[in-house]
Length: 330
Image (cartoon, rainbow, N blue to C red; front, side):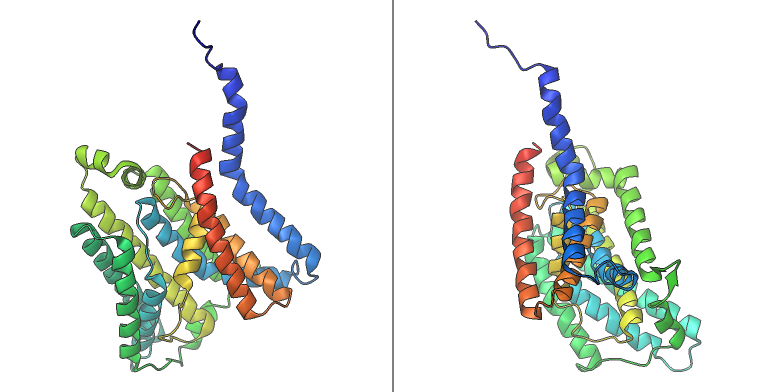
């Protein structure tokens, strides 16, 4: 006698539970974290602190959006922190060129920062795709190249004295929401549209799931890989400009560890390290978890060393969770 197959009706609760875990688990974790810090610190839910959280999340969120593109194709980018420093010092040098009107100086500095980011991303993508090298190794090399170039450009000095109008951008708010965070949200929205509503986005997911199938279908996988790293580099340039406007400096030593926080935000947000699955909306939630955690630990009075240890633990747990999530959702 043949064994009866499970009915579609019996499978439905399992499918619903999986969808809830996939779509709502990250949001539930974020809400739980907010509730915990609200109960343990009287200052957490104040307007000033919430505004501070949004501002602190901004840079990591922008970097994580670019890293999301790279991880979706099964790659990794360890160079974003160092490239941010290089973009910042180049932009800082340009913005202080003598004789330029403020608007022209800021525009050229922005173009320079984005341009440097694009070049670094282009090199990362070309080298890893053309020679078939692991992106881990290539971007690790770029990490050192960009950091060394930033120190060389500035002679290891910090650049100051930006135009007041440029500095004011980093502290502006719209209806109480920091303007820099709104810029980050705009980048998230554009990335979401590209990944979910364009052929390019569908092929990014396709490469992460089955690169050979995409290649056999006649699509130029090489170009798509280079494009994803280039996009990641471009958003690093934007992050560098925002970072400069917030802190009013361009230093060759900024960005240390930024790549780890960006990768952690992406993985916590549900994007698989193996590629092919994830979303920038998940990355948004992941960046908030990292930001809320860092802010809450400061309010609890924990030392920088302890906060660094906890951040490392969260990154490891995120990778472990990714493994279990792979098994659960297949």
